[in-house]
Image (cartoon, rainbow, N blue to C red; front, side, top):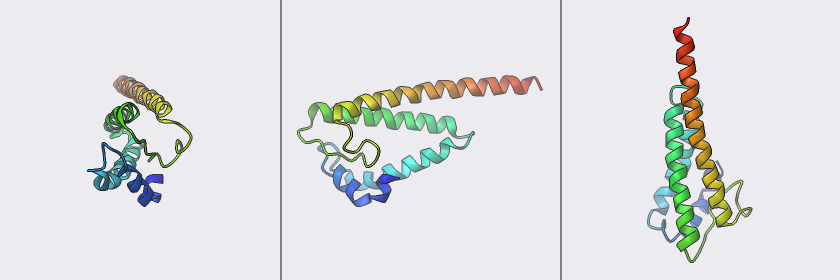
Length: 125
């Protein structure tokens, strides 16, 4: 929501990225829309698994991006636009992203386990 609320600042910051500046205009629109859509899909039981896998892809991609930026970039712009803005450096952000990616993987396994238990219980009715 913070990216959409301060769209011009978010767009400006990602345009400073040495890896994203060619795609900054389109990414500035796509990222908040996809994040909102995934958040909405997580609320619906039938789309939750798809949303978790989509979120895993997003987090893995973003984690790889943070790794590349932290390792290779000469300039590290901040486009966090929210909770982590000015709170974490890029290395700390990488660790948080790795943790969140692992959390999504655990969520996928837990969701699958939960759905299997529901199917088993429904079979006993």
